[in-house]
Length: 132
Image (tube, rainbow, N blue to C red):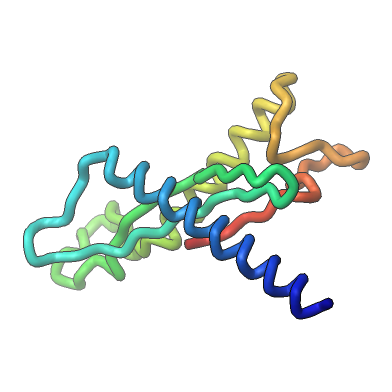
């Protein structure tokens, strides 16, 4: 019995993640950005899933490089040295969460976050954040 339940959960997660990846790649390709010929880049995204409704919401997407080469460091320190895709996607997701909290505070109901009894905001019970 437990094995069947675990298998169903695994299949749900697998197909759910496949759909999320399709949505993320759809956003990426809609931007019509491509790396120069013979180069590649890392793509990272954070997305939300609702385990009850099956809804998926990409909240950030970013590409990046491992780091700025030493030869390109500016003398005044005005450039970002670390631009990993994962770091940039996390920063963008943080901004999305802050904006979602502001919308919720302004009276626009969110499908993803809610205000707790202590006045703080949190993800709704059935919502998960995933980095891909």
